[in-house]
Image (tube, rainbow, N blue to C red; front, side, top):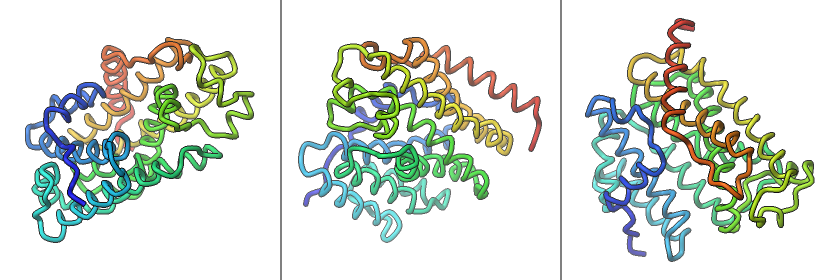
Length: 285
């Protein structure tokens, strides 16, 4: 099939602003910011193919994956967004596998719309979220196994809190990322997700899942302590975004159906400052 054309730069920049792309991107040295943006653009394009492409999404993802392989084989992919990735891959010796896992996650989205257990959701996050953290770390150097493990935990927390923010939207799209066993344990029927406002049992469930997110994000401080310089600032930006998203859920009393759970920039800035101050006080681990 012809390659899908979903990588217009103005669309990607609009996405970047809408998603509160980390504050660190705005203060990183130009070269690092350019490389981070090149990776982000490919990640965003893969997600758009899986979520918004108007035709056969699985076929579109397969076609993009074939073109993606050219980044490492010939260095001359057809899609503009991939052509912009080539110099970044070469500068930082980025591996292909994290990008392939992101494609597999979006292919899985075409078939799997429910997850039985929270552990199953975490397995999905290993495909859909952990690769992003790995790529970010690799842009700043060669991460060790412990750093990759901590990053995967943090990224899972960031992915799950995004699902909590998007419960209503995901439901409209036929997806439910709240684990089925957790729905049952809290007495929540899927029909409750169609209500105008979240009933008490759903709010309790969202609050419980938010507590799990906080536990996952607790891997952040030791990860930050293992990083230096711009890497520490970039990762702290992601962590601050996750903490601010939890603030947004608490602010609306976990009513993810009746009120849009917004992440406030001032909360991101506050958590960013706290994280950087705390890690300086703790010193290297």
